[in-house]
Image (tube, rainbow, N blue to C red; front, side):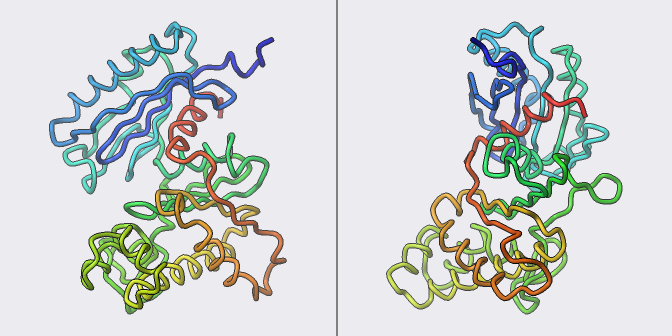
Length: 308
């Protein structure tokens, strides 16, 4: 017997600087078919849309779903994006995609509603749908990878700032004397605890990348340990700020760094929060993201499955 939510069907897209992932997802969060293709942003936006549309056709065929059965298409994209207008405006990692409307051509091609959100928001929605955030409210998710992304989900809805914009939790300042960040401040979470930042600090003292820094830190190398300790302190300070601002019931940690080093970061955050007096400490639990790289795809599809 089929569960009713298995008959709900949507397409999810997760668009990043180097890869675009596409999947067919049902109402239980199960992925029925997927593919990944290189973004090749520099080769033009219209070409990318055409390739995505072809990939969506292929995914529908692979899943055995008629296009008419699909409730909608959800897109999580590396920001900045404008969800209300369906515009991507990201000169940082999607070269040449400034002010590009991705919603209209896909809606016209497939005849279904199309929703666009920041990729960090999509990933957090995915974790709240069927992952580590399910059953908790509010939820804040931090994603540690090339950069540090963040999102808050309150009563099941993405928290938005003024003009519907996405709050950038990766740019909470944690150590003002530290490296300058492209955001305009120095010593923010992303400039200390992202894979890029850890790798850059490591290269100064002779390590190839962030992975090498973590490996050397585990064997007791003092220079590597200092870089990792600084990243842990940055994450713990940011968590203190987030917990006193949002007071989430669950703080979800995701991204490539957490795939391998969650225990280190969770322990540092727990130690930092232990002396808190302004909220009951057991109110906040820290959890590893459950969906891995699928969080953005599942969350994007969840956008299309909802009616809000």
